[in-house]
Length: 209
Image (tube, rainbow, N blue to C red; front, side, top):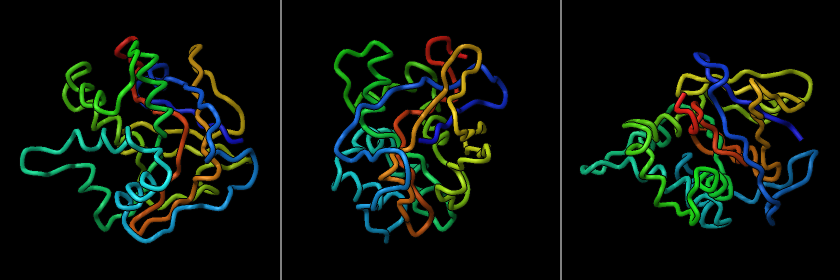
């Protein structure tokens, strides 16, 4: 199974909390992707909502996006991912968010708690984290998760992810995520979604760096 390490350009050691995802009914083993249960059609947001209705895997991700809606109903992430430009979204599962909240000391994880991110780490942090899961262009799995070549993919938040065949450890911090191989290449009218097992962070939440 492919491994993906994540780093920031400005600070190599401040990056990603690596989280293990327990097997669920939608996970496939290593090898070729399984048959995708999500029918393509709408934009990235519409497809994510449809996927959540079908699989129940994205309550936390959609809640995090919803936190950014202002009093006038505007939402920068929704505006971005429903527009005409092509993007690739790396979508963490609910289990990934629950593991992250647990690692931060939250004993009863809940999607609504994602809205507290800005109050804890500073205004704009939640948007930055979400933007760290998006890259320009329609990037299918053979472009991002390549067995032979490491791939550096620039993210909208300013950092990059690197897909490698083996785990990567930087300054003692394991920086590894796995794609959920039955849920990659979820096609949308304005891009593609790859489901992943970790919430990627452009900073270390334990040090603030």
